[in-house]
Image (cartoon, rainbow, N blue to C red; front, side, top):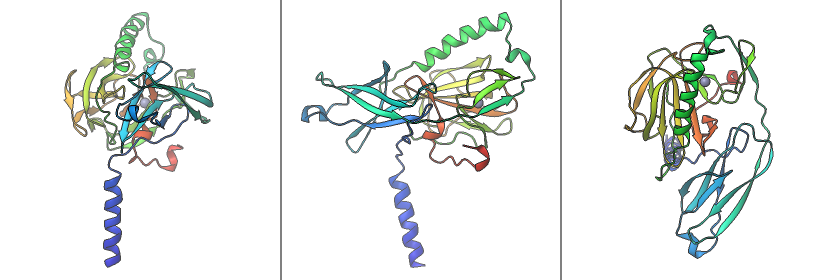
Length: 285
Ligand SMILES: [Zn+2]
């Protein structure tokens, strides 16, 4: 009995000390690198540096007086050494290397009944182009605020498709799967993964009803194929707040939430920000 109490205490202690979870360092294509930034001198110790990867500004997370740069790594990145550049207000600069490891993504073949969603008409293409501009505005958003990166799982459901699969729709190659799919019945509540501001919301050709939430410094979550949207642009959202319901709008094979995450304008695997997500063997992760 006594031992059980100690164990319980230890577990509580460990879980509470981990409640501010840093994202998982996983430097693979489609993953993220979490790089500790060394202080250059006493004069730089007080100021938060700026960091860039391929000209895109990076989010800086600070914990226990240590600054970390969060680097989203594009899916098309080859394995090998990469660099970020760091700069301080006093003009000091630093190039910080990291190594991208290999990762192979499997192919996935899907059949879409609505053929227009695979081969859009001329009219559809005009709409898609307008939507591409809106999506681009959303993903390039930068907000100077501390980053909200303590993500929760947004839907109670089953992981039905993982990030990075090389996709074929009706036998035709299309872009790789840039998000995580969680299947759940239509109408299941969708919760915001973290606190933030709604920066885009609407009906899109491929993504259906979609919402973007800005969590600060370029960390952005996106929710697609929703049945209903319960928020509007400009709304401030708390972590866990319902923002809509699961649906099957856009290019889908059934009801699910497509969750995508941007860091430095790059789509990364949401799994690395979801420590509580346990993938079963069947998901072949
Ligand atoms: Zn998806």
